[in-house]
Amino acid sequence: MKSSKSLQIISPIDQRVVAERPLMTEADMLSAAKAARTAQQAWANTAIIERAKMCHQAIDNMVAKTDILAQEITLMMGRPIAYSAGEIAGLESRARYMIDVAESALVDIKLESSGDFSRFIRRTPLGVVFTIAPWNYPYLTAVNSIVPALMAGNAVLLKHSAQTVLCAEHFVDAFNAAGLPQGLFQYLHLDHALTSQLIQQNEVDFVSFTGSVPGGAAIEAAAAGSFKGIALELGGKDPAYVRADANLDYAVAQVADGAFFNSGQSCCGIERVYVDRTIYNEFCDRLVSVVQQYRLGDPLDPNTTMGPMVNVAAAEQVRAQIEQAVSLGAVAKINPDDFSLNRPGTAYLAPQVLTEVNHSMAVMTEESFGPVIGVMPVDSDQQAIALMNDSDFGLTASIWSENEAKSLAIAECLETGTVFMNRCDFLDPELAWVGVKQSGRGCALSTLGYEQLTRPKSFHFKLATGS
Image 1 (cartoon, rainbow, N blue to C red):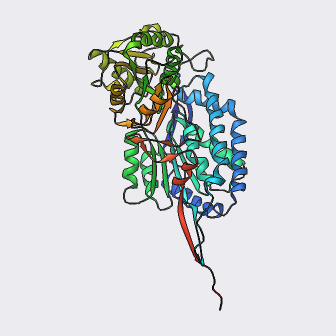
Image 2 (image 1 turned 45 degrees about the vertical axis):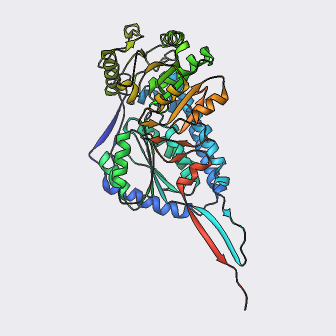
Image 3 (image 1 turned 135 degrees about the horizontal axis):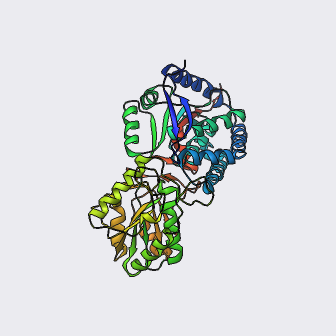
């Protein structure tokens, strides 16, 4: 049954319609969920080595289309074409790792024999995993749950953001071409109402969501009373602390990249910076010099280093944060008129560095998800720790220092899922990816990421005693 409703992908570049797709009907959605349940039962009995072969082939299929996928990323969400292919390279690296560690992550836990008893714990698949993926890194975020869910023996239903639904189609096409059983991995183009309805269905056993805090709250509300597992990767207001002993040239360049790459639209991008007062002025001067070199332009131009934000509303929200901060005494160090495409009412927004900021300003406490950072001076590690922890979010934090021991002592005090030293805005697939506070719950990546996609099943056998 064809739905009368449809969705359009509107490019932030020039408001063109990139693609239009019909939304799924309720009947088709329920049919897809039942098909996933049926396919999963056979898949659970497929050897891990066979699952791995198909998953590796699927990644091969996607890598072979890198140019096409990169072009579409740029058209759909505005990332400069110079960087879009990097997401496919990252997807490959992350997926290969999660495929290769599956066997060791899923191995039985064998306990010491106890008399006539044989005992072990087996990690068994949950059943059907519903992955709800965002637009900002549409392949990298989705692969975090898709690949380990399939490798663990689950079926996957994938709903992508309306801004990037083509990514869902490419994922499924690549895996189907690799030989996955029919119905095991499907994309669903759903509206919010049907998304909530699907979460409530018995056919869905686990929900993996990446998105906003309000979106996460809606997921929790939809799942209330079902007792099914939920993984939520939500917002961030990630801080950076630049100590007096930092390599200043390196720290400035990396902090700028961590704040402004992808037009600041990264859940683990730097959004606020605290700098030792003794180097504060020099840090700010150098940071402004770096940011002034960004080229805001058409992201299809390979010379562009900063593209538009995902849509006009997102850009206007960041503009409002900047205006509010300035009205409260912040100083805008970048003249937006130096960036010719910066225009209110469009998705193009110049990068901005704000000084004289404090935590009464939204730009220092509420998620910006755009190309702006506030920079504050601090007088001690203790003050930096207090300010870094003064947040409703806790995804990542970065420390810029040449002293590993001091950095570790600071890191142990920070309320966050990941602490970096001398790097930022990065996911290492060998490390657990977690958030605290309003940044979410659950654990993706690393061998630990398999724990939320399986359930432990205990086997307690008494051996035959004879006649």
